[in-house]
Amino acid sequence: MRTRARRLLATALTCALAPGAARALTAEEILNYKGPDREKLLIEGARAEGQATIYSSLTINQMMRPLAEAFQKKYPFVKLNYWRAESANIFTKLSAEARAGNVVADVVEGTGVGEAVVQAGFTQAWSSPALDELPSRYLDPNRMWAPTRRSFYSAAYNTRLTPEDAAPKTYDDLLDPRWKGRIFWHVSTSSGAPLFITNLRLAWGEDRALDYLKRLAAQRVVNMTAGSGRLLVDRVMAGEIGLALNIFAHHPVISRAKGASVNSAMLDPVASTVGTMAFPKGLRHPHAAMLLADFFLSREGQKILSDAEYFPVREDTPTKPGLAPIIEAVARSKENFISPETLVKFTPSSEQIIQDWFR
Image (tube, rainbow, N blue to C red; front, side, top):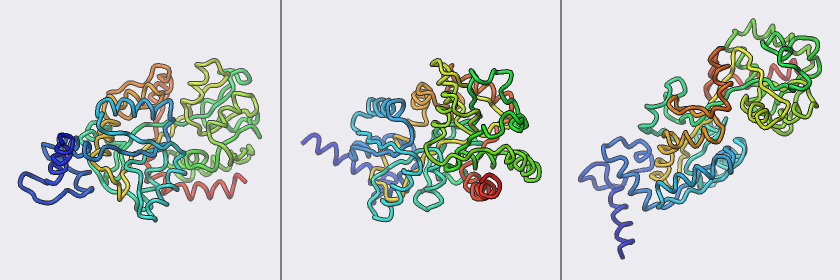
């Protein structure tokens, strides 16, 4: 009886927009609630909901499991379910759920997925006090998504086959005849070759970028369509290829710390993007979903992200020491942040450049 009474009380609390209101809050109102009793309302509502589900491209053992354990320790009345997949697969799954009118995900998170679901009209605006604590340059003015983690991009080279003093230091170094036919990039993801091209177009302007890309095309860059950027790094480590372009800069650094013959070459300007978090229309557990968002973006949640060797988006949360060389390299050069909307806008034309010049 006591448990039932608590649930009835929680339901009653979520039925108020303000003291004396008579109707239940909609999911949209819950996601944007800013009253002084916000935390209490979310907790009591989440207690009644009992669970939340997140679709994410974060690795399970490295990040999702520790995040779920910490979240459930803080909110033991909420079971956090998670499904891990690549961002493209998350989009496909959410699309199917939206069309069927049976949305299971309460939160979607990934690199590239935020802009895709927003463009498709699957998401809704939301607000959290945690957003005020994040760098403004990474925020969406329309509040359809929020950044969860940063990513920086580099070239990967084999340190056994290419001494550090011979590794590329600038984009012009990629034009050296020694790299002809030995440069690889991934063309099937927007964060691979399309992002490489978009970065230069935005940083240098169209004329200079296109002139450079024509010369780079003469190097017979090899297009990869299968696997992932991580697979390219593995092939560099094995000595199978000379250079891998536009891979996550931290992958070679992490592998090098474990003894692998690989390192990142940070080329100025350094492209950066953010992983994003969004809320789908039709979500079933808005109170618990908002608690999860608040937790993910808090210092505690971002510390878990940092410990898992990702780059936190909060500036008051330090990056893991082993990844400090990347942050230092970015600080010495120009970080060219490419927002999700900009990436969506430029990717088709950058893909056309690949079709025209790099096939």
